Length: 163
Image (cartoon, rainbow, N blue to C red; front, side, top):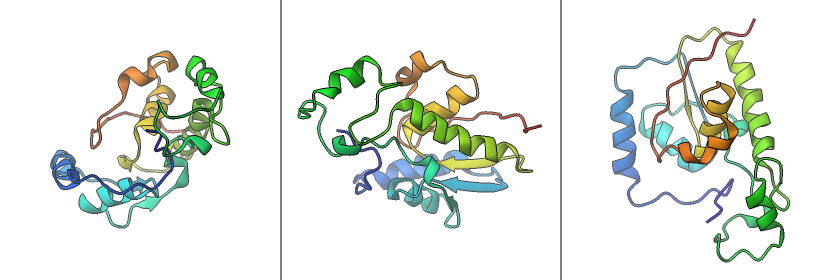
C-alpha cells in the first residue's frame, strides 16, 4: 500500500510499539525534538514525552500523489513500472521522486546542522530516515530500501556542524 503523506489511522499495536520506542529513549536529553506533522509521528512523539515537538513538513514521507492509498498490485498507472525501474529520479504521478524527498530532507538537515544543538531527536518516516542516512554518508542510494527501519526503530547518526 502506498501510504506516503496520507494521514492514516494508527494500528492497534501502536501502544506496544510506542512503549518499545519510548523505553529506548529513557534517560536521553534532547536539545530539540522535531516531528513530521503526520499523526503516526506526532502521536509517537507525544507518547514518548515530547508533545511540543516542532512539526516540520520536510519530515513527511514521500508524496506518492495519485498512488496514495492504493495497493501495489492494484495500481493500474502505466508509469508504475517506470518508477520501479528508477524510483530515484521518476516521480509518482502527481507526486515526488525519491530524489525530491532527499532534497527536502537535506534542506532540513542543512538547517539543523546550523543550530547549536548537541542532540536532537526526529520522529519521522522510513523514507526520511533513509534519506538522512544517505545525507550522512551512511548509505548509498542503491542500498536505500534494504535499510528500512521498522516502525518505532531508532537510528542514531552524527552530523558535523555546518561551517
